[in-house]
Amino acid sequence: SASINFWISRKYGRKMVIKFVGEKSMKEIDEFTVVEGNNVLILSRFFGFPIFEFISYAAGLTNMPFTKYFLITAISSIFTNIFGYYVFKNINLQSENGIMVWIGSIVVAGIIFTFFIKSYLKSRKTKKGISS
Image (cartoon, rainbow, N blue to C red; front, top):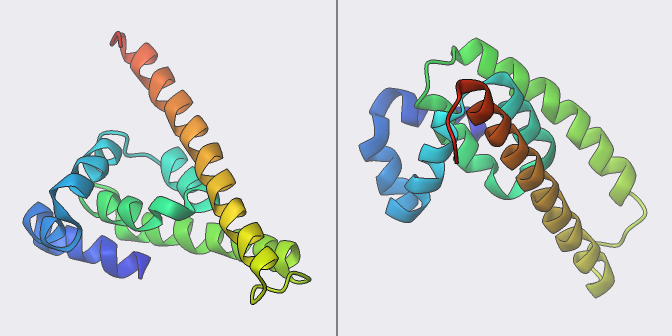
């Protein structure tokens, strides 16, 4: 689905993405298109589960080549899938406790991603001499 989202935004642009995600979500996507780069994509693949789809649309709106996008997404996904398997292999995801652990892990990953992305954005602004 990540590759499909990339190609939708690459081929059809902002208007089509807005139809799929809405105006409010498009504002979030725009924030990531400003920060195009390998570091953001890699971090999003490891920690950005809640906004994985937004990152894919955003990458399609940048000038990042699809091959680079695909390689980063594929390689990062291998690691996150292996990690997820080992973390959740003994957890019953059909139980209330198992579901809470799963939801909690998504929330924690989102918090970690938010911390890293905010730090990255701040460092980029500082390097460019832009004050907040």
